Length: 137
Image (cartoon, rainbow, N blue to C red):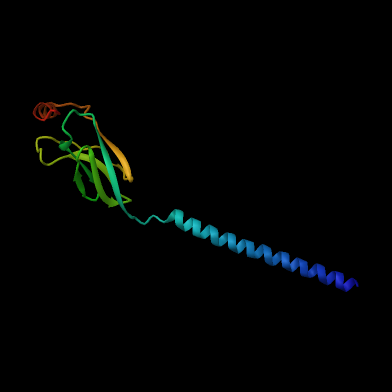
């Protein structure tokens, strides 16, 4: 009778050890998958809808949305749709249609939907001339 009691406790200990080991393995695998998802920095294609907040007083056509990989697109009704990669940065730049006007905003990380602001706080003669020539109607 003492042997039976000892044997039953011994089996119970092994069952607990096996269950704990199985739980540890399942937890480790789950954490591995989660880590892989969070650390996967592979660039993916992204279509970004960019709205122009034009504080310069120039026509929206004077600006383009561009990405650091060289892609660029014009604005239509204050909106541009730029296809690029998720690791790129986007910025505003002057449209080559107007070679007398030069503008470039600081680049920011691309997002699926975003607003870029054209702020011409350092007004010079070129921008004043552009304002006169291309006033919004």
